[in-house]
Length: 108
Image 1: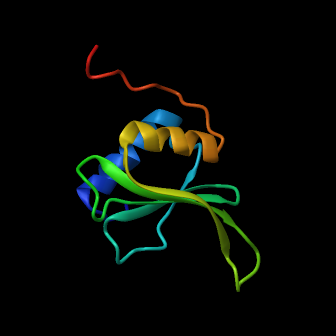
Image 2: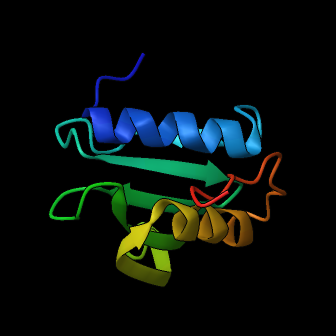
């Protein structure tokens, strides 16, 4: 089991619920950074961090992984302080994953 900040552990649970735990791989190239994690499918990786973000908000960077050691990835997109729902949409679109469950609005 990975050891991460509770904000990242909550996110991992949220992503597992939304897409299924077998739909992607969890990448942890940032073991020393307890507030960062990656979600990968094929050669696409989304790096996510909660450092410096409001509660339940995230920084993300979408990367296409390359074979070239001098340029190991291409940054495709990034944003900061996005909500959980916005991040789930980014994950769905970038990793081409259908959502198993949509979160219910807190207003319903």
